[in-house]
Image 1 (tube, rainbow, N blue to C red):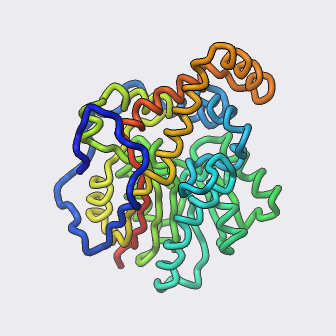
Image 2 (cartoon, one colour):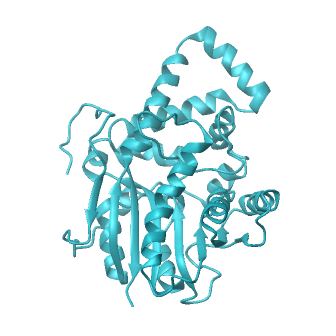
Length: 337
């Protein structure tokens, strides 16, 4: 457990933490307290962010300067020598999740079944990459109609539809038959799910016995949140997130549902810490009035982004992330036969 301090954390960290199956799995209930949930959260806010209709979507329009947000929406994965604001950082995260999943799949009794369920599939980038790179047949499920339409358009444009296709559906009530899928993943989307335990129970339902489940998510760091609750709540608000589970609560719930957790890693230094540094740099630039006035006009005219909304988003993100209230975790599990 990280020692609490009144000072923001240093943004460079040691190597990622890996926890193997011989690590003790907590048996107590680590579900996050209701008081940490975001008051007033609504699914409509998530739709607004990902349909480009609310103020939080301005961050994505701003990022269009460097990355293809019409296809990719995850935070990415980079090492210290790699440039982060490129499409390659999205693909690195997808590969980082895919490779251990496929290694576990090759060891399973379902190795000849190359179908993947992508939950919270966004605009289809991860599913398309899984097909083009690994030959997987992908069914994506996303609750936002705009994302589903864009994802299917992207799949057709890349020539992979219908081997890669997307439907509208709820992660907590999946339109998928019981014990029908050999592999399931969800990349960063669980943060937006209002009941992550129902989501995990649904994953367990649709997976074949011995099937593989991989996911990534933002993680609550409880000691830090206790010290900085207002910064944490502001972060939830600008990202339209109802609440976050912790590293320990996810491990506990997976075990209780009948998953065998094979690997879990904290890779905060490979994405969140990088985003925090980038945000801090731009917040510093924004303090120069002449630059801000010029840049606000430029991003509005060229990408349609309101820089006031972008600055608000970055500020609240930076305040929470620089104080260590949120980590980023990767998980790979097998459904027990």
